[in-house]
Length: 340
Image 1 (cartoon, rainbow, N blue to C red):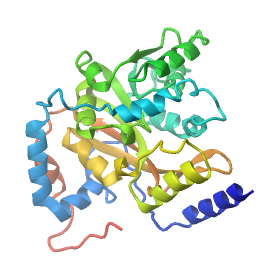
Image 2: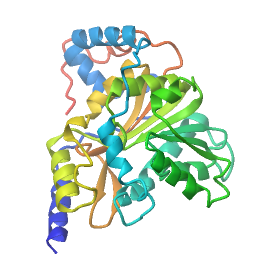
Image 3: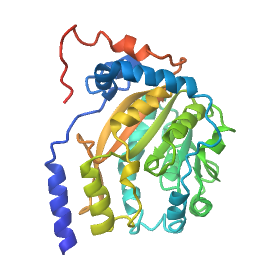
Image 4: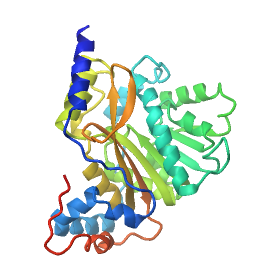
């Protein structure tokens, strides 16, 4: 009874939250993405031009010399998910919210890929596209992408999770030739698959990684020019701590206690800056919200807790200062822009 009252109160507070900034952008071109008035990058450019310009140069200089000591793998996270490896397909268990999230993230991936590539085949709109599902777990997202016609490779460092994914997909003949799984890290795969995928998906993954620079570098390496990067994750705000950890883990028990570490959460601003420094441009960022009363997700203007990002790998070689050149005339000299 008390958990339901708490959930109603929490959901009501979030619905009335003033942390709102519409971040959806058109998927037409890089110029449109750069010139969007909601672009976190443009905002940061105006505020920290000199500092970030130096940061871009340093990151691009070091981008292709990543040492083998840099890894996305966090042993503590591996141990957490090892303990839950057999529970991926329990629709009422620890991963119930991830199953429900498919109602948002699958159309988000499908529609953005169709905007880029067009319809490949009626009934199988993603036919002919190779998708890498990073941190696939038990295949909760890999399977619906495969049913849309994509050739999906799901990777995860937890071997037992991969075995669970393989067993579950084996029951569906339509997936046997279309969805494969491999127990490995992203950086291990990046050594074998250079520009081999049309899309990389990392859903509810980056908040569990040890090195986001290594992650972005590997994504850039395995994607074809013009390929898409899809990320869903948790913002680093006071609200995300209250709802994502205190409420979800300790009070409502939506996920096991200790699943998340608030220090590993990342804001949309920082995530956009990260991927752009590795040769991507961001097409869309959309806020997401989970309703614990209904078990359903919905799109929101607020990115205060959860959000989804779609970025595209630049087809041409990314040059430091190129974004500045495209955005420096965005405002009239001396004019102050309000990004609130």
